[in-house]
Image (cartoon, rainbow, N blue to C red; front, side, top):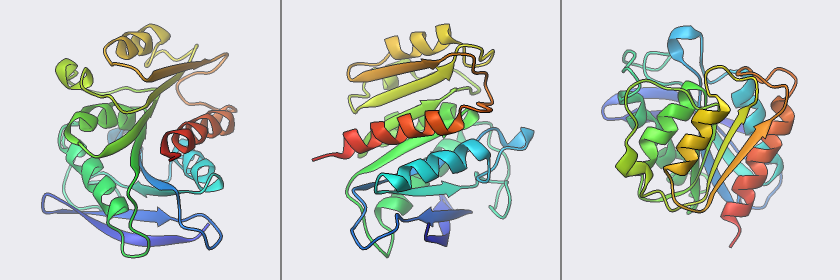
Length: 215
């Protein structure tokens, strides 16, 4: 999968990222920025769930950006408590849309665990967001209930039935805060870390974005 090292400017803080394009000569149908798990617990853009989502997106003709939040890897800055990371997510989306190789009109946002919580917080502040997918969403701070109620783009919320952080009840409550179209999917015998179920889940996420991006 062709990939390019990129630097992303997030309100003056420079982040590192990898922009991936599908194989072949056709232009991607769209692009997705993928947010990684909690940086204070070892989360970064090389997380296995993040990588699996990126691969599934590429298989369906969608470009993908994985990146490190501020203070992670070679990204500048320091941990922002989940709030400043929202700016990082929006900056990554903008970098996908305005990349020098194949600027994209349709851009989505995905996140896993802490990254899912960041994506939920960033979505109301991203007016051009085409689609949103969150996997085992977990985060810090209060949810922007009014902001979530304004998210009219396609949305997908995924978790496992054995997830003790992003429980089925929490995901269903989140879905109830957002207008249609909002999809949920619960995977049996699956906990927060998705061991053994990463590929199946990632393919579901990629199918969702492909359907959302179809003209």
